[in-house]
Image (cartoon, rainbow, N blue to C red; front, side, top):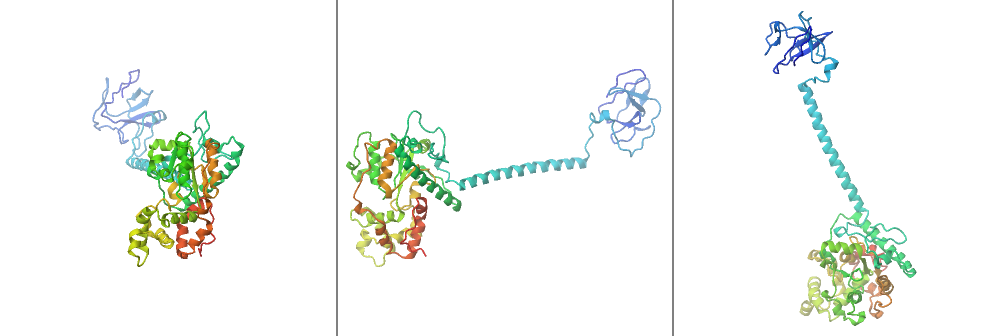
Length: 468
């Protein structure tokens, strides 16, 4: 520190290696060293203060003139008790910060460390809280859809909870628009019915999600049952034994671009040729998402046990289904029939309904892999808790629901859903007769297997079941 010369004052030069401080004593200041002790006569500092004309100054009393100049008194400064704590003048307190004591440094370091720990704990708690919110949100709505599949962008009667605005084509109306915002009066009544069916599925899926710990994400391989019609922007999930042959015929007419005009002219075996219809799993991920978001998605369902008995009758009691006899019949007879004949073991052509149900509820069957599509649950075939279906048709009202879809598409005047003989259908009375031949335990196990289909599609528990 250097002082500018002026009358009655000396210029002091404090070398950089020295650590002198000024101790306040009334109106005068005294030089003292780093530890607050006075620089007394005889003390040899590392370097001395030089004052012009007065030789070496070892100790003295100074008076503050301003921030840069001090007045050096020739008289000896009064004694300052060494135990008196150092208190800088108000003008110097802010410009001369005090070095921290070791204990203060340790305390400050601990406070800073605790602050960092608190921030980390707060961030962890906040992240956990957000995750919990997302988890409970997923519990009260259907499972996250495949690749974040978005629901339709229209509402009817009341706002659909799955609404996403602006998702549909401009300048034209498609089946999805007609369903959620009908322009034709005759379409308004069925729209209310199908809203009720959609709500039933949503409620069942929400309840299932709340009680099940299993969470799965769909892959393209799960979408092989969803048939796509690009021309009319339709997606149909076919369920075997729910008029799926006739629906495939209709889809071939819709996608054939004039190749077909009458569904019943198409042979049933040709309707099941995979290359005749395009399924959703054949698209890229982005294309799948686009179609699931913008196309009308529908499926048809049936009372679960009637569908099961229909599948059994068709695949195991008719002689022309030898492929099913070989593939499943021989396995079922080998596992569940005692003293089976060689012919039965070889051909598998006479599987009993009791043996068939034993096969279905056997845990070993579940371990072998997914059930065959003809007796697999609708929940596993079409994934209605992952994919939001806009329309749920029922086998019990097949013609009305099917022709309603065709009217939505805009082809209702030129294309009608095929009708066929009802005498061959599996009825409720027929189903009750088959179930009377199996044990109570098997009935309970079968109901547990298909219970979710009963709940989702609002089918009551059959009166013939013995569940007690």
